[in-house]
Length: 392
Image 1 (cartoon, rainbow, N blue to C red):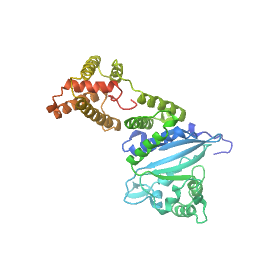
Image 2: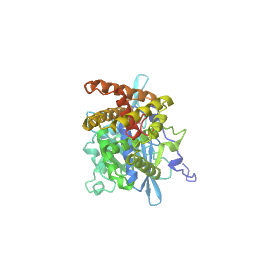
Image 3: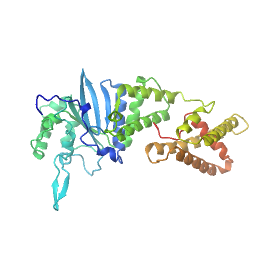
Image 4: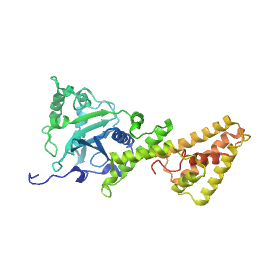
């Protein structure tokens, strides 16, 4: 690029590719990793934006004094029978041409990691690898923070790593002419193991960050709030950059406001005196008016029965309510995770079928199906059940 040509911001550059948005099967690990960075924004005032599947798998924007710094992150959930190594990092993809396998240029993970340091962009770049599998001894130096003295010690493992990589990919340069040493000196490698490990760590971080949005929730409410954050990540990943680039980006201030609203809603759910919350939730699910009216009547019937001391022993009623709540929570979890792809009407029907199964299992207790339906609608009115995915 000519020195007279003005450079652009990464904000104004199109992604190098957008194939990940087309097919998102198997992206659960990456989504949990991105959700972790969303949560980091709540307490890290220097982390101002997180982008999902835009310029890279994940892009972070940090503020260093008055300058923006872009961090490009590659997330790999590869299933190996070995550790990550220099050979795996630098391995080129291949394609068949005239019955011969030809290596694709710039196709290694190493080269893709640094591809976004573009000549036409003006901001400073950082890089990060996030993998499920552990690294071998050659790559362990990258697991230390950028400011760690171990990166510049006399026995410099980083120099040794650069030397070994340059033997495999000699004279490597980014589009902005940075070499191997420059790139790796700005790279951190995180090992996050599996989806469950990342999810558990994220929920723990979310709870620690709670003072920043001023609420304290019950155990199941933290899980529900995290599920909503994860859904927000998924929606950003699915959004098309060509249609709405901003839909792929979440800003710190916007996220903080949204989190406070969601946490406050969870902390102070409606007590369900009028049934209006039930009506709103069923309307949101697209359920017809006559079905909604029937549901409201069953809720009222159930409320009147449980207020009558002669109706049922309290401990017995609590056991039944817990059974209903647990079964409904299982279905909601399947809906949020994508295991179920029901629309609102279909999911409502599925919940009714599950209640019928519960009635059969409780046959000896002579529980009426009407009471189980009323219990579900009572829980819905108290914001403890819903018929659409979190964030939907």
